[in-house]
Structures are given as structure tokens and as C-alpha cells.
Image 1 (cartoon, rainbow, N blue to C red):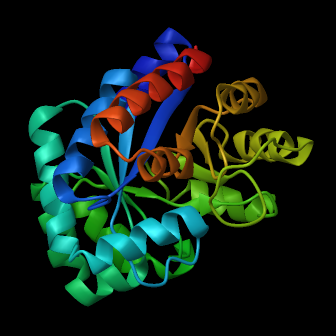
Image 2 (cartoon, rainbow, N blue to C red):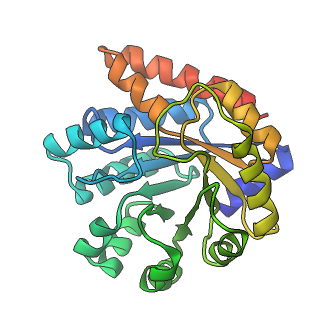
Length: 265
């Protein structure tokens, strides 16, 4: 991630991180979806490992998670999808997004080792507070994996400073109060939160903003507020769900990513 953000800074571009749900609508399609998004301009891919109680996710990603689990997706199979994406895209950072139970159930050291072998560069774990992440942080450091922690608009400055000391890759700033899911527009408090987070991290790590971003105008709003990257998830899953023919969906996703990336420049 560090190299990617360094290159983005040189180009004065905001980064585009695109989320996919592993196994939705199926494993092979997940790999093709990532291909389309990267061709469209995605700077990094966040791979969701489905979990039965995804508390940070809104209805769109919850449904995709449930469908993926019902189709037989497992953490091991999700890492297999990551391995396939990595084999085709050697330089694109791959982040795994999942929940604490997945990591703990499989053993922190063992699961992170498997993830590293499959090409994962770091983890986003929304329900893991930095204060309880000691073993995860230690194992991630040993395995050279990024630890991406989250902050929200109401996270106090002192806590963001503490998170900034533990997060690597970037700080994941939640843009709104609530769960993931596309929104029509953002309010000024989201821009204020970006400015506050940037001040608190003081250049230690980039600030990437996620939750609700679904349009080029949203990307421009976040970029103008100072975001170093945007994370787009539910809007991507919506396109997959809406399109009955996968080929149509893949074309739309590539075009969608291209429009978002254009707004990043």
C-alpha cells in the first residue's frame, strides 16, 4: 500500500479502493469482477470474506454476504479467490475485509500466514478495536501485513492519534454515522471529519474514506475535503445484483470504475 500511495502522491491523485464480496455471485465471477475494476482504474481491491453477522455493513453487503455463505463460501475459499486475483495482478494491493471471529476461529497466526501466501497485503477488521488488537498487530508486523483500523466522524482527536500509531497502509475513515450503503449526498460533517482526521494523523498515514460513496461527485467531494483515497463497496455490489447477465455487469463495472477514477484526478 505504501508504494501505491507514494505513486498517487506524485501524480496528485486520490486513490480508488474497490470492494468485492468473495463468492458473490460466485467464485469465478468474483475474480472477473476484480479484473474489470482494475482495468477501469482501481488502485487497490478490498476482498470481503463473508461473515454471518456483518455489523458494519448495510443491507446491500449483508445480502451479498448471506448469499455467498449459502453458496458455500468459506474463509479458505475466499483466500483462494485472492490468490487467483494476485496471480493476474502482481502490483495491485489486496486487502481482506472481514470480522474478528473469522480471524480468531482460524487462529490469528495461521490465518494471517495463509492470507499472506495467497497475496493478501493487509486486513480491515471493523469490529476489532485497536485497544484489543495486540496479538493481531504483532502477527501482522511479523508477516509484513498492513493493519488498517477504522475511525468515524465522532472519534475523538486523541483516539485518532492513538489509532494512527497502530494503523498501517492507511486510516479507514467512515464517512457517515451508520453502516455501509449508497447515499444520495454527503453533509458537511463528513468533510469536517476528513479535515480533523488528516490533522490528527499528521501525515503518518494516508486517510481513506469509505461508506456510502457511489458517484463521481461523491469522490470529488471527498478529494476536495482532503481524502487521500476513497473506498467504494455497496455501489459495486448493487451493479452486480442488478445486472442479470454477468457480461453486462462486468462492462458496467469497468466503466463505473473509470468514471470514479477520473474524478480522483
